[in-house]
Length: 180
Image 1 (cartoon, one colour):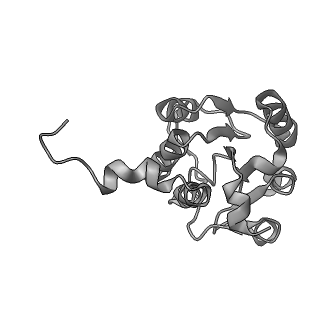
Image 2 (cartoon, rainbow, N blue to C red):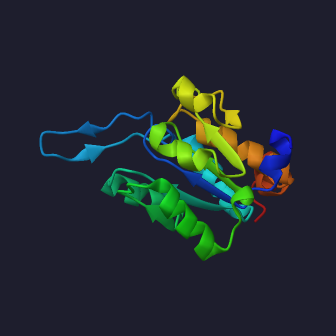
């Protein structure tokens, strides 16, 4: 099966956070407040996916209020933090949502993601992931984590599913100004 055929079947995109939605750095100030930087183009891509009916979820080993806030901004309901065994959590999500593994894309960047990356329909990693992860996935993005890699995946899924035109029409052909 080609990558495009795999992407066309995606009903659920699950993402690791650190190193995928962010560049992997964690900034903690003197008061212990954690900060992460998210790429807004990734966020818009996730919103476009949601408009096309693709469910999105986060599965991360760390716990952070920043992640809760970002997920809420993006309307992501499946948020699983402080996950020690991602495969167990992903199995639970798939069972609850009644989605088979071959209709899932998972995007991760490190050792802890490998058990999931190798058992879903589309295992995806970022350009700056270690070679031992890049060598075991279906797709390595051109962009690094936290720098548009998620947007790259969102656009590819939308195009493969034939949803790109419908979810982007208002941007490419907006009504004239002054017309509601």
